[in-house]
Length: 228
Image (cartoon, rainbow, N blue to C red; front, side):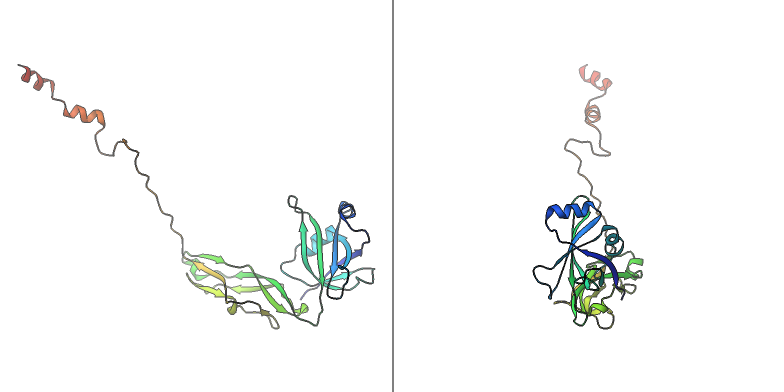
């Protein structure tokens, strides 16, 4: 797998005020922690542009290597664990990095890529992914960038379950039940609703009220004869 390299710096000042100053300077405050780190980890910062270019574009989990002049950070291998973003602008406010042991397996989430056009879609069905990522267990160096799921053979009502996924060597899926990953649903038919005519509205083909009264009234000549 590809290892992403980013440059980080240690920072001493913590708190909201220093964090705002860091962000105003085009950098992102972050923390580095792990099983061997004490006192809540090590505070650090990195360039916002480098984060956007190398880390924000990552799909799923990826191994990241720190480059730094600080001995406690240099060459550390980490995973991005959490990102806090501004609720309105979406700007990254803070990032958490977790150190990993390259010799021990860990659980991470990996994105699914659905490839091919299902036979059921050709017949008018609709491809419906149920999940777009799954949890897998593997060594940090074997984390796949994504997992391909070939849906070409799926007909209408067919599904692929997590047990059926083809995973790379050394990677195993983590689940309790054999859940559905993707399915092809039958085409939906919209029901055409016919609105009932409002009370008192004329029915098509029936005479209007005035016409009905006119039809019931006797002709003038007939009325004259009756009056003779």
